[in-house]
Length: 135
Image 1: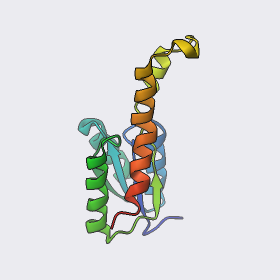
Image 2 (image 1 turned 90 degrees about the vertical axis):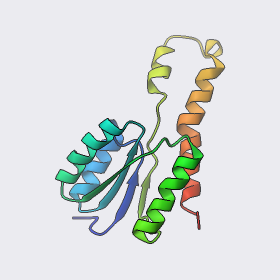
Image 3 (image 1 turned 90 degrees about the horizontal axis):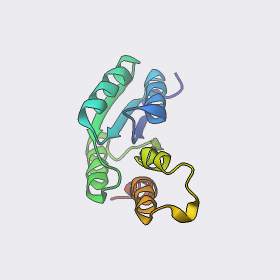
């Protein structure tokens, strides 16, 4: 049990790598806040994470929306007295869009793809990093 009493946040944790990380943190005994945009997938993941032994708190949150990330960190501030030991900013929803562009030369990629990558990935990670320093 490497993480007992640790408070962790894993964004984009309803599937894939984020879910795998949340499962391992829970198995180590941590309190794991997990986020995703889709409630049903999030709740299914939360059941699995809770079954591993730690405490799991699912929060519906779109990491690309500043107000939702701010509300998430306010919730952490209140529930955990501002404590957050581990942040895994994993949320990213551009995988399907990028895959659809496979084989196209870079210069033929639409600007909308660039916007999606930045909004879903970089923007969300930026808001999470800011959240660490909210009063």
